[in-house]
Amino acid sequence: MRRRVVTAACMMAIFMAAVEATIVATAMPTIVSDLGGFALFSWVFAAYLLAQAVSTPVYGRLADLYGRKRMFFIGATIFLVGSTACGFTWVFNSFALNPVIDWGMAALVVFRIFQGLGAGSIQSMATTIVGDIYPPQERARVQGWLSSVWGAAAIAGPLLGAFIVEHVHWAFVFWINLPIGAAAIAILARYHDEHVKPRSHQIDLRGAVLLMLGIGAILMPVIQAQELNGIVSAGLLGAGIVALVLLAFEERRTPEPILPFKLWRRRTMIGANFGGLFLGMLLMCVVAFLPTYVQTVMDRSATFAGFAVGSLSVAWSFGSVIAARVMGVSSYRTTGIIGGMLLIAGTSFLIALTQTSPFPWLLPGTILIGFGMGFCNQTFLLVMQGSVGWNERGVATSSFLFLRTIGQALGAALGGAILNLGIARYAPAADDMLGKLLDPARRAGLGADTIAHLTAAIAGSLHEVYVIAEVLAALTLLMSMFVPPRLNPTQPSHH
Image 1 (cartoon, rainbow, N blue to C red):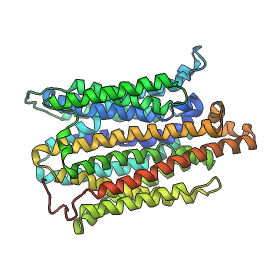
Image 2 (cartoon, helix red, strand yellow):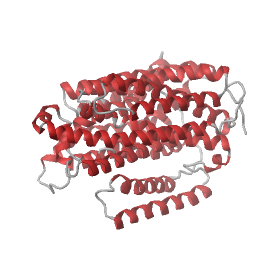
Image 3 (cartoon, rainbow, N blue to C red):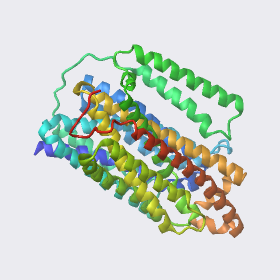
Image 4 (cartoon, one colour):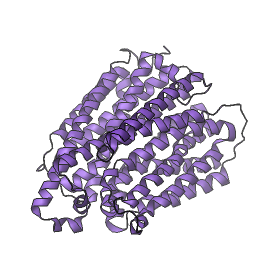
């Protein structure tokens, strides 16, 4: 009984983490219409994902020293405090500060970083706790329960986000985490007994700091290309490259690196790692900007936007199940190739969209992309786990998940940069009107010509984002070719 209650708490925590991306993406057009700061749109995603990616392996190291339970409490508390603060960012717009800066959106980005630093603990610690309390012969069944949580979150997130922004206030998109997180903490505190055996570890904090500085400094001029002058952009890029070079030296000499470069010497691991990176980038190029396309270009409500994102997520869940069957009778490589072709087909549908395309034309694209994600993600993850021995499996899995999350941050940054540049090119000085376009109540006051001009600018910009998504789909297909031809779940390879 106690073990099932602890498992339920872990499932609640994973649901909270899983629902975060889709529920915020669905609400973003409404948030931008309220806070302004359209140029910072993609930073709301990139800042959160980057902080989550960098903090995840740090929590993993600390959990071996101080226990999973304690690290979960610390991470979940940080996450909930950040969630609370995110919901209050509308207050900043009422301050009599520099009017050039949209302080509400700037504050949201800062608090999303804080939220992401806590999120790095939630999924990893909940999954580890479940692995600790069940013996090996029962773990497969329990992992099935955890997978069902992601499917439920995929459906609930977009629909819940749409309901909140239409009937309550967008702040509750963040505040809905509070009762779920508090309940998970209370249950684990009461029912999970953990006996920590201290082990000697060296925490790679310098590596974590260098990684965040390096990636962050490179992302900044990419996203804010319109706002930063050439000297500042060059300085940030140079600082980012220096930080990543120092990171490479740091990771070679530290006993427990945050980035295990030694695994990258194998062709199979290179393909799977970069496959995860490209998948993450492709996912955010689609999901982060799909609600904006639906609500501005197609002039549909947040409910339709949520349905579009939800269809992709549900297809991903079904695709993962089907992929497991396909690779059982064929190979990892075949499954990955099928997934890559599905991704290319799906992004082709998005590229073919025009301003007059009806909403149903969008769904084949999102569904095909969802199935392709399920096939490819399952392929790359299982290849990583099957290509190493037991003593490297944990670090190999975390390496894949880490790079996929970094890919999501890069994808949000790249898509945001293309969107910002496109709008600056197609509709200069339109930033003030974009907020009105995203608000149904104020949209009608813009006039038909203005609406047509702005929607054309957004449609043209997002068309370019979808072209990049198709390039990433082709690269994902290419990474599938790195997998040995006859490798499948019944014939693991450790080479």
